[in-house]
Amino acid sequence: MEGFASALTPINLLFALVGVILGTAVGVLPGIGPAMAVALLLPVTYGMETSSSLIMFAGIYYGGMYGGSTTSILLNTPGESSTVITAIEGHKMAKAGRASQALATAAIGSFVAGTIGTALLVTVAPFVVKFAVSLGAPSYFAIMVLALVTVTAVLGSSKIRGFAALGLGLAIGLVGMDPVSGQSRLTFGFAPLIDGMDIVVVAVAIFAIGEALWIAAHLRRNPARTIPVGRPWMGKEDWKRSWKPWLRGTAFGFPFGALPAGGAEVPTFLSYVTEKKLSKHPEEFGHGAIEGVAGPEAANNASAAGTLTPMLALGLPTNATAAVMLAFLTMKGIQPGPLLFENEPDLVWALIASLFIGNTLLLLLNLPLAPLWAKLLKIPRPFLYAGILFFATLGAFSVNMQTADLWLLLLLGLLGFALRRFGLPILPLVLGVIIGPMAEQQLRKSFQLSAGEISGLWSEPVAVTIYIIIAILLLIPTVLKMIGKARGGASELTAGLAAGGAISEDELEKTELRLPTGARRSADDEQDGKDKS
Image: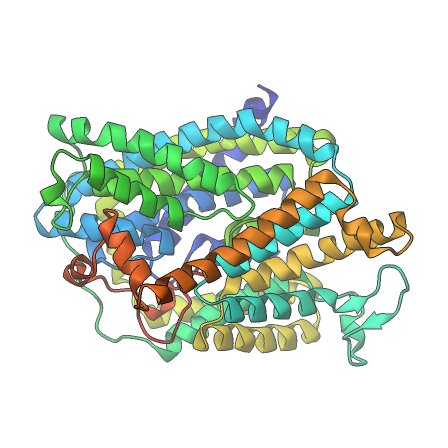
């Protein structure tokens, strides 16, 4: 109740409104996601109240999930990897003259899933905190290793590329003064690096500068055509066919988001497969089935709520936006982790209460204003990304008012461009920068407790269990690959999924799905320099 009292103050309501409007806008525009928007706004929040800033960031996060469905349905161009499944059925509905129904079931499903997911966050997070407080340094280190390994090796398309990106992130996190010995590390005699690289500069460079340079190198001069929207609303039959997929999608999305290796891609795919199996109209799938929009969109937004559970309770981000939000807390001198609920209860509960408010605001904004959001797609890309470069440079310079930060911004921006050029995922690098120093701290504590013995790393039952889970997760892809080879084909996994009721290769060709080069946002999407779905 105190959280609602704080979130309902006029100033916080204003920031929630600003956040959901910005989030929807960046979600609609292909190539711009909530992670880039939050990174660009980090310098602006230096003089703001922490709770107001977090409420705005949460609004951007939720709004980005809403806005991504608009681009997928109207342009057949997912702005986020988690909205790829929505594009498959949503764009077919739009081409059949049912764009308004597709947008409506996506918006209402997002509201239902977001509300239920936030309620589950309220219920689950305190129990996770109680469990986390009882853990020692070895278990904490194991959990951090689990988060890094799973996001890098399991969710990515290539283990080598994923671990290469993670290594770069860990190296950037080591730059500066050793917290124990006081020696300089990786500074190369450059004095401004003694205090390490500012996380704001790193986030803005990797997301904003790298993305803008990448899209500028692949800019398409011919804008994509959008489909007229009409008034988003649903008929009685649409409601009847949508409400069960909303609930099932929520059941898929929240647990996957709450896992340290969470993400929205897997639950949206599972939701689509499930709805195809359970639907009374399976023949419509691939031609515009409303269940194929309702379920995955609900899973997408429930996963967003679930992602906040490990971020707030354990201090572990599982996607890029959560990583930047965690960097904001660190920048404000707030220690993330299980003690956050004890040390900053007003901040945490105001944030969670604002999620309910922001979710309601998003529903009220998205239904009547869908045609207006569609017009954002007509903004010329050169104007858009020139503005991003300008504000990114201004924001990075305003952090410390040092020219050295501009050189770091340029170098890291070129690194972000190179990552996209060679298909290395962004998320492992960002998590390495943020979680790396925290993992180092827990690693040193473990060795101090065990007098330098390496066995101290698995001196707790929880740590042993987590290392077993890590080993299993790393071995599963190898075992599946060996089974596939034994059956005599490199594409056995795809064939197996198709046989299980997922998307067949023929259906994928029929979708005519277009992923712009600038839309690769997660570790799953950054595979090559070519467009892929």
